[in-house]
Amino acid sequence: MPGLSYAEAVERIYGLQRFGVKLGLEKISSLLAEIGDPQDSFTSCHLAGTNGKGTTAAVVDTLLRAHRVSCGLYTSPHLVDLRERIVAGGRKVPESFVAGWVDRRYAWIEQRKVTFFEAVTALAFDWFRRAGVRAASIEVGLGGRFDATNVIVPAVTVITSIDLEHTQHLGRTLTLIAGEKAGIAKPGVPLLCGERKKRAVAAIAAVCREKGAPLLLLDDEISCRGLKIDGRGTVFSYRSGRFSLSRARVPLYGLHAVRNVCLGLWAAEILLAGFGAGLDPETTAGALENLRWPGRFQRVRLAGGGEAVLDAAHNPAAASRLVQVFRRVFPGRKAAVVLAIAGDKDYRRFLRHLSGIAGEFIFPRVDFGRADSQAGCRAPEALAAYLGDHCPRVPVQTVAEISRALEIAEKTARGGPVLVTGSFHTVGAVLKELQIEP
Image (cartoon, rainbow, N blue to C red; front, side, top):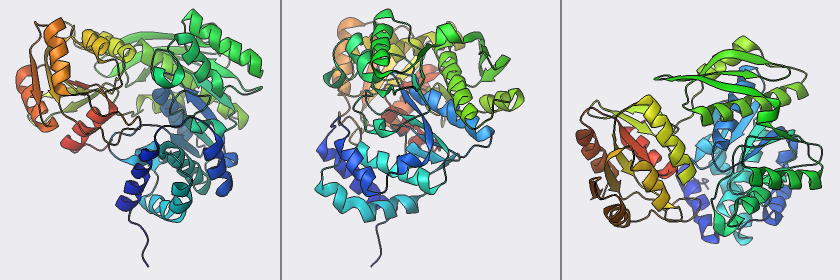
């Protein structure tokens, strides 16, 4: 009897969302034990943080591949295809492996009410073992302490930034959230931290002391400077105790991106040292210049020839940084903003940030039905009503489909940029509409 197709397997995995989001390590540990604890077959870099952890993970992966280390990359969420989350050697996990894995494991998983993220995490670790991965960059899904990824014993851990998010799960203060994210700390494993806020750093330091994990702050240990932002990204310098780059370029934008890249460089140094190797300056500079990380101030062409910027910012802190970068790259210009955001996000502060660069807002209805958080798309009418009360000078339109939103935005922009933001799902819908492979 033929097994599942890839499409059928994905439907079954998404069906696990009915079990919700359940923080804890009991079920993931049982599932991994059932399949032979694949997470023990590779070393890793474990990354947490409100924003930037995916970028940092991608930098680590890019540098390891450039230095010929068999590596894996596990990130979330995806933009278009579930397989984007699980990459080994720069290639997405094969459809055939996903289909076969779900076919064999689904009955066990469903019976025990394993969640969507737990199942995908186990699938990723199993693929890394099968693919011969020696070192993996593993991004936390939610929080840190009770996240399904926190079963690994990494060689280095990273916290990129701390801001208010997922407060219903992590707590309503920076201190509580920082403490949860610091739960990835392990005895004797260095924790690299890019956060600067004193309350957050103090909470992280307290957890590190309790666990016996050395805490290393980026601003104390590493010299990293953004030198120039232009149409091709950011030029920056990096210097640690063992390695330096004087004028490296990365196709990402802004000082926050530079900090995330430097955290990735630092973590890659530590991982490579574990293999008795180090970063080569020429190889490193070339790898960074060719870094590809979709959905982060990604510049693309629309059907009518206009330019769009796709950015998956989905919380106020990310929106603030997006506005800063937009003003540097497009000084004095306004954007036609296409925006859809999840119902559990702080859309009020998000919109207030974006209103400073918006010539017009277009709110489409986007299918968030497969969002990890289970939160659907906030109604376009609710976003329009809020702006009507608080930013009445900015024109607003609501539309039913993303294709219509892009069509209107390109005409409204009159040669200026279209900005697509609010969620990974919004960016993914546009990439799919434009037939661009992430």
